[in-house]
Image (cartoon, rainbow, N blue to C red):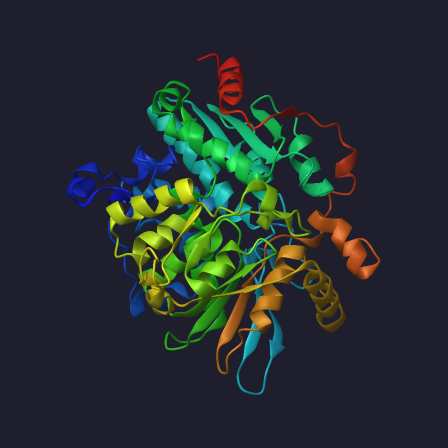
Length: 492
């Protein structure tokens, strides 16, 4: 399996392709693009049948071996077995089996065969779906670094959940340091405490005076400084990292196989979406042959993706135009993974993809609606890929949290509430709609208290996390100062 940048010119694509281990530690390609396979591996009906009875760890191995063909199968199987255990994913709700790793719960079942199902993805150590990929990424990094006798300085940005998932996955790992940016005072108290309370010497938390997009732009700027990146051995765990995206593909297969009994049944997924990484994994699963009907992107008030899937216009917002909402992990106005989908949408044309995303930097977006003056007409092809979208607001969030608690006795987090609200608007007869859970409600207790008048239940061990001592620094969104900070602590 070879990988190529989304911005690679057609004449250079073949000669510049790399294997999985080559791109694992890096993040962005040298041309600023994102890595994708030169062709998506295909899954047969016979394979789907055989996979129905597999454990999550074994299913992960079967899927990942199609992408990580340069890792010996025995080693890859050992890595997935080490990662996906009920001891790691132990924070299941009452009535859910931790051993299933991502159990399904039917919320609604209509007379016309419609089902609304919640797929639990937040049973890991930081109570968020990011653990599903990040725990594997930590083990892959440690394995690869040991093989190469190398070190890695992870530089990432988070709007809330990626940071804690990365830090819990990487803490204590040999040869790894983590420098994690987050928007200062714009995460929930629980999210902030999860990250900043870590005292491990290889963890560095930096609160940026700005919004998430400022932090993400700094990660890209540092990654694009190739001499600095090489000298400081910079890698990334943001969803621009291909290994993280492909690890998320697994739970789409698990969700489909658990919700169906035969391969002629179709399932749709609604995915709370900010940076487009989670739903991009669904797109990849669909391209591999998983019988997904629709992929529904649910946004909050920061509705850049919803606007595109309604109109064909991708218009990023300025920092001053980004709303601080009660589903803060989706307070993103520049979806970094969106480039992977656009690359497929424009026929895997690297030159065109590069031109479109250069226009994002110079003009704030692009228009594929096909209207006079537009940059293209590819929006007409979006339906072929099964994408739809919807938007949820703070009031929607509160109402959905109340409805789900009253009707099903489940307390959901704010982002999952966005997903359920939009999913209900896109139900179709005879089709099971799976909503991907984003986090446990305890991570956003301020809004739960507002909606329900009582605190969200906390898993054992998280009772007083906000009271723990916190270690972090506050910095402006200044790339040069950030480089100096990293260099000071790496000694390189």
